[in-house]
Length: 341
Image (cartoon, rainbow, N blue to C red; front, side, top):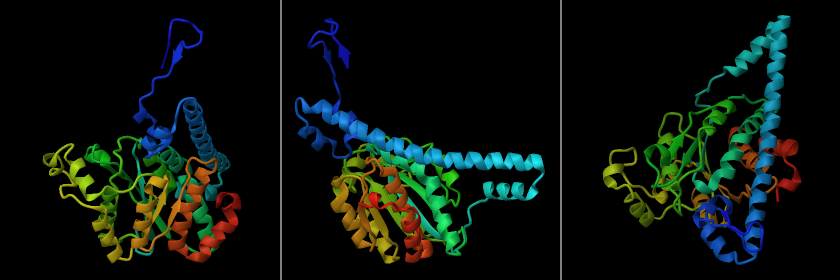
């Protein structure tokens, strides 16, 4: 954007915007959205979308700040215990801080797949801000149900598209029972890349790899605003770097999301799909239906988007780890009716 030489006179100021740079603002269907924005409504529409996104991010930050305050207070209590020589409090604090991932076969393993392309900054920010709250709430419910705090374990995996190199098309955390480690992983993730329909097949491919381990996985949750690549998409987009490049990577063999989905279906592993844009709705409904998973819309940019994300993910984790009664207890304790619509 720039200013002309007339210093404030009418017509002296113009904004020049590259349409593709508005993807973070308008979502995966930005091209369709831009075509509907005309003349005098353009600025007001973009301003409204921007304000909505920042309001949502502020709500997510508030959840994150509340969680940080609890950690801060716990640290102060630890320091006071050290000063007073209360070794029981000191011991409990250190055990919790240094607790590693329990990889026992009784743990319900949930893989959370997220689209990490350019339009997904809102989701990635919310996931980072809310992951500790997800774990805290789940542990409270499990404790009240008399279940182990190691009843569930999670892994985060980010997928992009074939205009991203091998190290970026799929980024994966370790399996964790500690939310702080997943938050640390999310701090390294930036929204980048993207190419229309995205490489959901890469995320599902990773899910299949994890299902083939001794521990396997209990379920997959996908959060995204764009549908999976078609078979033709995969062929054309892989040509961007060329098969000579991909042949020397983990992804040497092209795959299609339906093929990976069938492998998960054969193992009775449900895929729950949450779409952030109607652009992905039909495809995500098909994905969920094929594996007997659930499919819902997630308006991450609403004023309560971060809270909705927290509820959606935590409920599915608890459903596998503690059953429907655990989900009902969670709703009674944490879900406000205004957020469920």
